[in-house]
Amino acid sequence: MAGLYFEDMTEGLVVDHAIRRTVTEMDNTLFSALTYNCAPLHIDAEYCKSTIYGQRLVNSMFLLALVNGVTVIETTIGTTLGNLGFEEISFPKPVFHGDTIHVRTEVVRSRLSKSRSDSGIVTLRHTGLNQRDEVVCVCVRNALMLLRPAVQA
Image 1: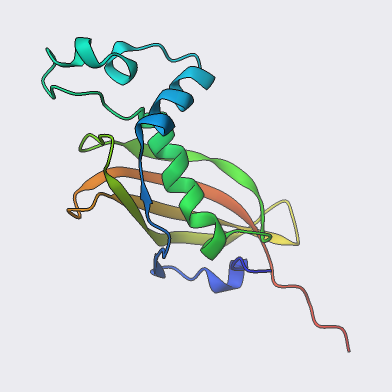
Image 2 (image 1 turned 180 degrees about the horizontal axis):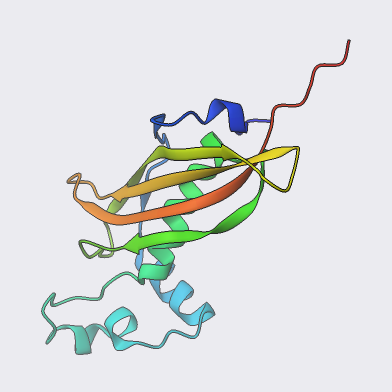
């Protein structure tokens, strides 16, 4: 598997993810429509002309999903048993159409599972940054990660 096993996710490990993604108007509009989020802040250009930003904001739930999705290939693909939840989510700066997002992951904590013998719990801090390296999203999440399989003799 391409993902990291529990033993690979040592506290302090930092991964600067290779994938970068430019957010488009279509991303924002489609995500807002699919999730029934009809807030004019995301979909109404005329309304947004009179807001503090003067333009539409990218839906923060899209940004959260993007930041987490970017991390999968280099961290959890095939080695996670599930996302256990988020401890913290923040959006320090807004994201607009045309911004390019890149992501950094840091392993904050790790411990063996108390109820499962095949896995451990890893706490990850994902930081989304725009093309100016401004932090636009920070989330801290817990993932249930597989232990490396024992080698059969």
